[in-house]
Image 1: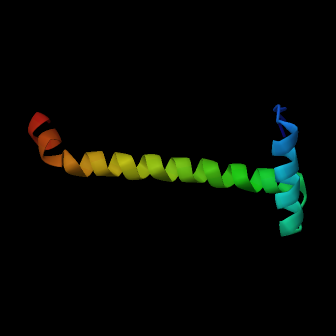
Image 2: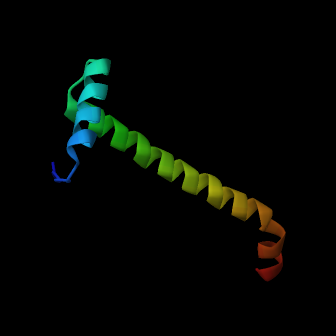
Image 3: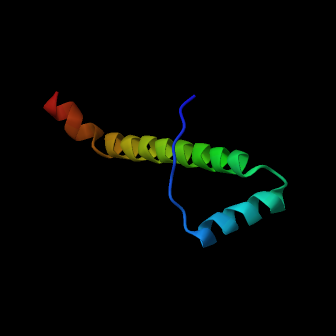
Length: 65
């Protein structure tokens, strides 16, 4: 498994620690879950946008084929 290091301000780190404590999970678990959610939403948004463009331009693509 790879690891990365990022620089956070003291206030950002404290906010993350507080959020993890509120949810009763380790900071690392919070960060991994948040990153996974973000990555999945980005993929979903791309797929939605691609489907929209393909549907919207289907007739044009058919004519060009």
